Image 1 (cartoon, helix red, strand yellow):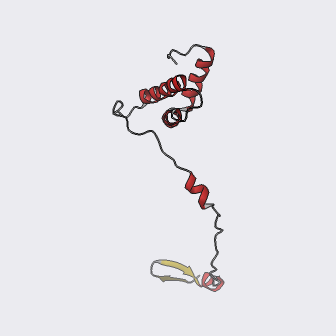
Image 2 (tube, rainbow, N blue to C red):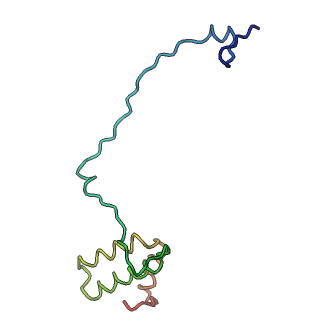
Image 3 (cartoon, rainbow, N blue to C red):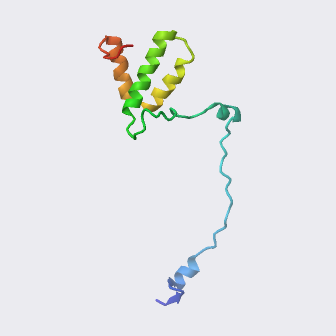
Length: 115
């Protein structure tokens, strides 16, 4: 078989004869329609910096925010909107498993915290 070398690539005459030109076709990808109003309503944020917890490990920060939320609810009532900021803080800082465990302890009456 005759092999022709061109710029480092090897192709046989059979391969050249068999190669068909490929027609390039532009394909438009479907665009997902997103409601602009709903995107503007979503705001993702975490708890602000607290100088009481300057370290990388945020376990104490999480625990404190959880307690602050329940303290706020105990002092101001279940439906107070000011308490919701503490709920947002602890939910963004604390692992779900911890919160679930703490909530179960609170319901069982074994929570070591005051509130």
